[in-house]
Amino acid sequence: METTRAHKWVVDDPISSHYKIVRVPEGRRDFLLQRQDAYQAGIAFVGPDPCETMRSVPWPLLAENLGFLFPYIITNFKNPVLMLCRIAYAHTHRNLCCKRRAGEWALETLGERWRPMIEAALALYSEGTADNTGLSPVLQEFEEYCAGYIGSLQPDRGILC
Image 1 (cartoon, helix red, strand yellow):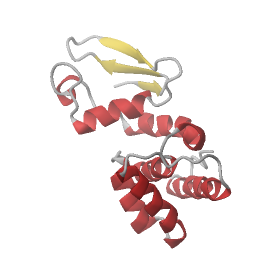
Image 2 (tube, one colour):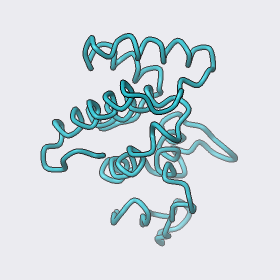
Image 3 (spheres, helix red, strand yellow):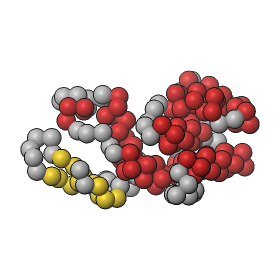
Image 4 (cartoon, one colour):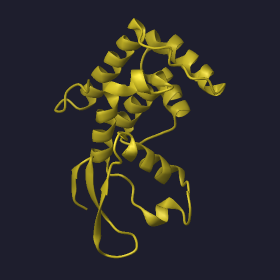
């Protein structure tokens, strides 16, 4: 499989042996993240199981997509604390998981300082309530911490934000 950048990706066509180009829809920086979610969860939108019709998103492209999203987490996502946990989890394990699992992992992994914020985010998420109260100093610090954590896993790539 040939990979270039996350905004242009050449993949095998599941129906024939030809290649086709999949482009990120305009304004959708989370395209590959959603595609991988569907693949891993086995969600069939219409037709057969996604695992039968498409391949898993290669980690380098998924990581690049997460990097594109990182600066927009606080301002554009309903659950920025859990999304930051999810991105940290993904870089640690080179795989995605759900927000709840990422939050539980972060409670065990990211340190006591962040425990109250992550626990509050998990509680709100369980209620179906968004935890995004806007830009705050503690949320910015958590974003910086997550960027540093991810950077420490990938010393050659540096910090995301």
